[in-house]
Length: 604
Image 1: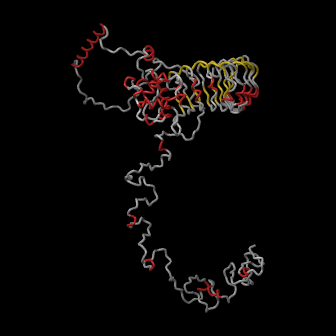
Image 2 (image 1 turned 120 degrees about the vertical axis):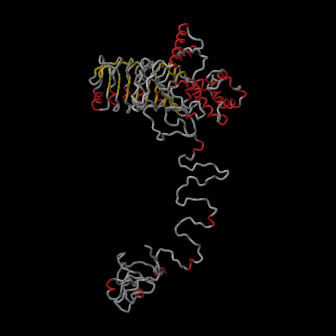
Image 3 (image 1 turned 30 degrees about the vertical axis):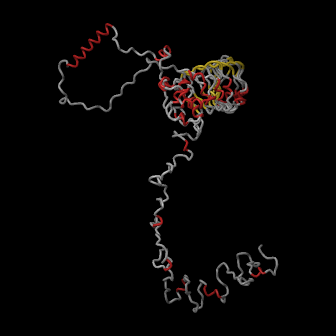
C-alpha cells in the first residue's frame, strides 16, 4: 500500500495516506487535518476554511466587498451575478499580447538573425554551397544536371529492382507463378493439312472509300484508233509466241522444284537454316582463333560423349553452332555456363531446322538466348539467366532431338508437342532431373519407351500421347514419380497391364486409351480423390468395371468401350451421373449392362 510500517519513520510526516473515507470522496471536516504541511484540495477546488491564506485568490467571488475582484497579473472571468454588483465595466485590455503574430519590437530579438517565418528556403550566404533541394518533399527527377566526374550513371526511377544491375532488359513477367491446367491447348484429334485446292480466295470487299469520279463534261474524249504503245506490245507478243513455238529461250529460269523433294535429292544444297550460320570457308581455323578456344574451353567435358569428333566435320550442327558462337560480339565475356547454354540452344535450332519454323524471331541473334522466341509469355530463365523452360509447340519443328540439350540441366519444362520431330529420345536426357512438365505429344517418336521417362522425381504433368512408343508401364511409377497428377500415353503401342499402385497417386487425368493394354482394370483407380478423367477405351482389357470407381466424386468422364469387358456397371456409379459430377461413361453394351452408359464411342 506504499505506507511506511514504522510509525516513527520521518516519511510519515509527508505521506499522502488517506483516512478511512472512501477514496476520491474527501471529508469536508477533516480534509485539512492530515499530517504534514502539504494541504490537499477537494475535487471541487474550493478551500473550505475562509481563514486560509489561499482563500483570497480563489476564482469564486466572496461576499466581502473589501475582497478585490481583480488581482495583479491574474486574469479571471467574473460570474454573471458578480457583474450585477459592479458599477463599472472591467478593463478588457490584457497586460500581455498573447497573439501568435511575431512582435515587431521584441527587445530580446535584437541580436537574433533575421529569420523568415514563412518556412521558405533561406537565402543566406552559408547556404550558397549546398546542392539544390526540393523543399516540397518531392523526389527530383535528377538531383544534378550533370553528374560529377567519376560518379556512376544511376537510374533514380523506381521501376527497376535494386538487384537489376546484372539483368538484361526483361520482358513483362507473370509474377503470380500460377501453373496452367495444361501447358498447351491439347487437340482431341489430328487433322490433315489443307491442300492448295481446298483453299479459296476470300472475296474482295467493296471499297467504301470511293475515289472521285469525273463528271461527264470533265471526262476527256475517247481515243480512237490504236495507240503506238499498243502496236509495240502486239509486236513483242508475236515475237514471244514464235519463240515459244520453237522451244524455251536460252537463259529463262526454270520453275522451282518442290522444296522438300529438292533438298532430299540434293543434300548438299544450302537450306533456309544454313543462312543463320557463317560459311565454314570464311573463318580461320579454330586452333588459330582465340574466340574458338574460349568456346571449346567452356564446353570442355560437359558435351555429350560422341559429339567431340563432330566438330571436325564441316556441315554438322555441332560445327555450325561452334562457328556461330565464336563469331559473337561478347563471346570473350561469357563464362563457361553461358557458353554451354547458348551452344545447346543453337544446336537445337539447327537440328530442328529452325530456318523453316513458323516463328523464329530473335533466334541466333545477338540478344540473350532467354529472349529468343518462345510460347511462354514470360522469361524462360531464372534470375541468374539459367534456362528453365522450353515451350515450342505447333511451330513446325522437324528433325531429331540433339543430345546437347541435356547440358542445360536447369530445365524443368520441356514442351515440344504438335510438331514433326522424329527418331528416338537421346539417353542423355536422363540428366534433366529437374523436369516436372514433360510434353512431347503429337509427334513421330518411335521405338521402345526409354526407362528414364518414368524416373523424373519432380514430374507432375507427363504427356507422351499420339506417338509410336513401344513398351510397358513399370510398377514403380509411384515410387519414382510421387507427385504425378496428369498421365497421358494414349495412341501409342504400349502393352502389358495397368499398374495397380497408380491408385496411390493423386491423379487428376489418366489417358491410356488406344493402346494394347491387357488384364483387368485395377480397383485401386477408385482411390484418387481428385480423378476427373479416366480414358481406357481401345485396349484389350477384360473383366468387370470395378465398383470402387464410384468413390471418385469428382470424375466427369470415363470411357471403357472397345475392350473385352463384361458384367454390370454398379448403380453407385450411375448415381454419380444422376446426382454427382459424372457427365458421361461409355461401355460396350453388347457385353456390359449399364442403365446410364453410352454404347460405344461418345458422339458416334
